[in-house]
Length: 350
Image 1: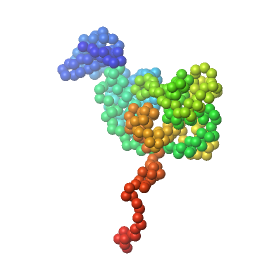
Image 2: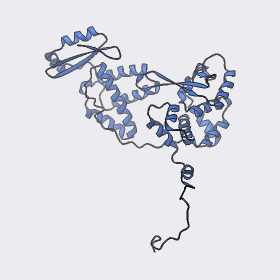
Image 3: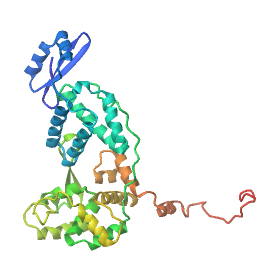
Image 4: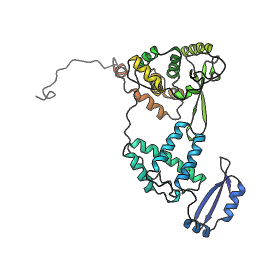
């Protein structure tokens, strides 16, 4: 008997001689009709027929869905993964004929350059296959997940010392100063700042609402964060210069929302004479500043809006161990008095 799924569609299910097949339909009637038509003879015949979907057609359908539901950055990542797969798997290959060996061949080619990149391709193609299992009846064994993750060599993200941030801040224009201060005082993602409108700023409640597009095509997720006194004052002055209830940070050249500001940090870092860093490094700097100031991990996690404390801990570690913090903890403790000593002959190797 068909049953309704969370997305509103209906899944038909049929078991014959211990073999189970399922398929998803828009309506219960279609699912029920499909169940009635199933037979072991039909299944045997289907295995010898030409497949109905090839790898290229499937990837095209998946990317069309991804373009509608995910951010442009995520869509581009998925598009690249599909493109790389075509270098090893012929586009006209039936999805039913793709094996874990094919998946391994694809990922090994990518892993030659980077294990990180191979794991990213593995993640995206595995997600595509899972989607295909639900909507295209792809085999239940996901060939991409059968391949184990590759070793990764991740270089630690460069996070500037706070003094370098303020050097950059000092050479920025007044509007860009507000932009940078907002990033630092909230730990916001730059995309969240691009989307920020005056309706998201609650001056009376001294708080601001940030929205980010979550993974899995789940749409936007919003959270309210407190405004610091300094940021509250800066936004107040910025509000006096703006008109209407539109974007807080509007592209002055187009009058529309920013899509990127890649050159901004390059120019400011060069002008300030500091090692270059980007917008996301400021988010890391905000996290470590909060943590090193004594805030507990759950509070920092709430500020950054991470779903797991593991991610927050990784942000906090990005500045590494600070010697002065370690020294402050262990110095002048009870029983920690240092006394002079004379190295023994054994200790100095004589």
